[in-house]
Length: 308
Image (cartoon, rainbow, N blue to C red; front, side, top):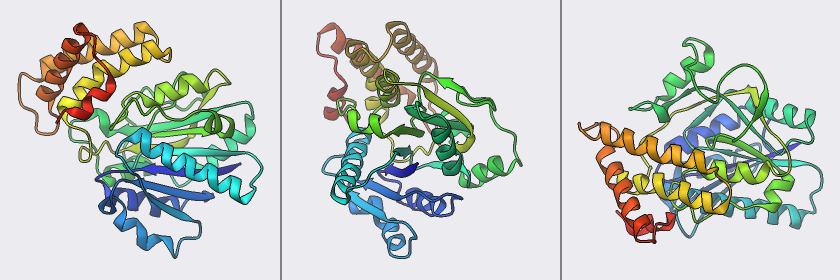
């Protein structure tokens, strides 16, 4: 099973360079790493790694920022390379967030699981800790503590030690096999941060097979706060994206409405006091703006492109 790793990045150049170095230390190396940024400052620290790397590292500059757009650019780059080289055989594309820290055996376990389950269409790994759910995020030192066992794993919905089938591959570490990569693109109507793009893609993939949870693919998501979209934009996405996915048919109505209510209540409560790391007041304002647009019949995920 040939594995290609795609890293979409913006505003986190040092983190993505560190992840590239970590990928070059994997027990099983990827066939190729593609780093997709939006400007030179996103990818500058990666360039010195290209020449000495034991595997190709392709650095792309995308015409527009956005997680989905950048991943699509990298995906299409890989598909074009395979066509030009006449490549055959099974492959999968591994999508990692630039602030994800994988265990050294992550790619080996991924490959073994996909080979053992040829009907599977995707895979996601075990989270030992997730800084996205912690106010200040996690450091690389924290990640090392979790990976080496110096700190016990934190509870997480994408945790556990038993392999199983899952509804959604978690976006910070998700894999889709060749037939899914060739059939589907990430939806660029989910702009910038692309919130819920993992569920959208997973739902489409599950029409063709099962998504594996592989507990041997161990990692830590730092949840770095820099490089993220503004509180106002993210708050708007918390409402607009689920409603859009209901209409598209990739999110169940109950799940979407539960998301909307939960985030509005959480943002309202947490906006009562300023937070040093998360703009809950901005998120609440974005929630309210999306609800106003909904009543006016113009609520759409792309509306955040006109917000600050």
